Length: 176
Image (tube, rainbow, N blue to C red; front, side, top):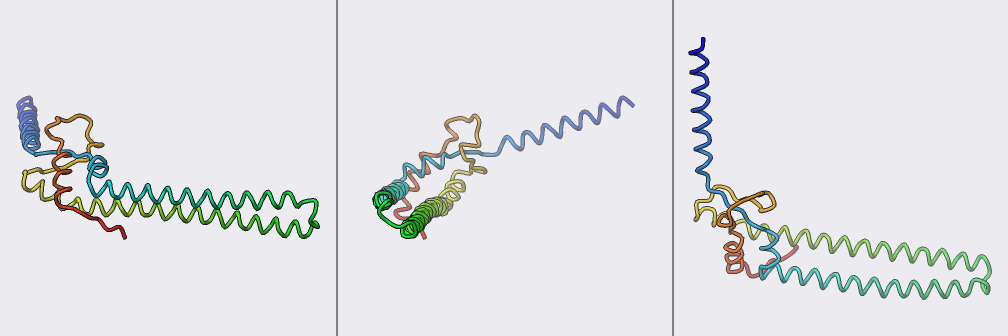
């Protein structure tokens, strides 16, 4: 009976050892995708486009808000001059304008968010073949995002190499 347990124990250890050895031969690397996006030539252009759109939206919002504030102040100053019905009519019109303003702001923010998501998506689509080719040429079995790596040798970080390859191979990304 003891001999059976010993053989079972020995087989378990051998199986575990062979499994560990086979996994240890996998070539793994990791990459900081945000760094590649933020520091690539194309990524910088996209970031500048996003900043320009944000600035334009902010300017548009401020001018619309100023117009609304002027209309509100004008209506408030006319409160005692206008009849109750006329004041309520203008008040509801002002309220409708406020709702329209909020809708425009929401639409512009949604458009900007969609642009940002689409830009990232197109960036990653352009990056995918570069990663695949790099992995193939360097016999890398797995490339992980650095956010998923707790501790790793700096020699496994391929971020700078991929950034250089990306800049050399991708000159423009069209966001749909």
